[in-house]
Image (cartoon, rainbow, N blue to C red; front, side, top):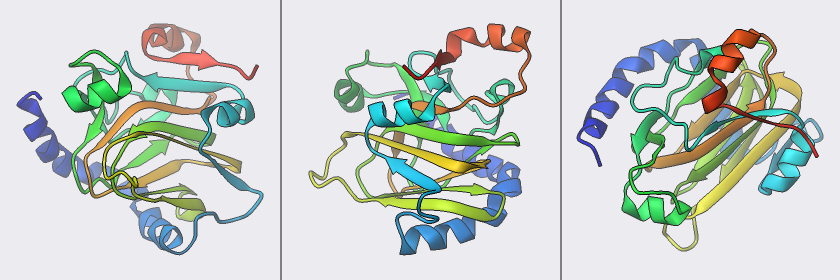
Length: 218
C-alpha cells in the first residue's frame, strides 16, 4: 500500500472539524443503533439483497470502482449532490483485491480503524442508499435527517473472522440527508449507491459521466 495511506489518517483528523454540520445527529443515531436494528417500522426498510434493493430503489446514482480517484474525496462528489464524503480513495492491497476479484492496486474507498464518518447529502436528501463493502467486526449504520433518526441497524461481525463482501441497502419513505457509519476496523467500500438528487445541471452531469453510472428499475 502506498505511503500516502499513513497521511490519510492525519488528514482525516484535520477534516473532522468540517463534519460539524452533521454531529448533532451522531449521538442520537448511536443510541438508536445500540438498542434496535430498525426504527419506524414500515417507513425504513434495510436490505441485504442487492437485487431486491435495486428493484425497490428505482433510479439511482452509483459511484465507485473503477472510477475512484486517489486521496481526499470530502468535496469531490458535490456536483452529484453529496455535500460531504469522508472516505478516501486508495489502492487496495492484495488480500482484498483478491476477494473482490479486481486488479491489484485498484482504487477503492478506504478508511482506517475507528471509522465513524457521516456521508452528507445536499437537501432535500435521498430516500435510498446502499454500500458494497468489506469489514470484519460489527458495523453500525443509521440514516438521519439532521438530528432526527429515521432508522439504524447493527451488522454483526463476520462469523469466519475474516473479510468477506457485504451489501447493505436502506430505503426510507422520508428523505434523509445523513448516512452514519461506524466500525472499529479498516473499512473498504467498492461502491456507494443512492437515489438521484435533483439539482445538478446537464453540463455538470456530462462532465461526471465517467465516475457516475445511472440505473433504472427494470
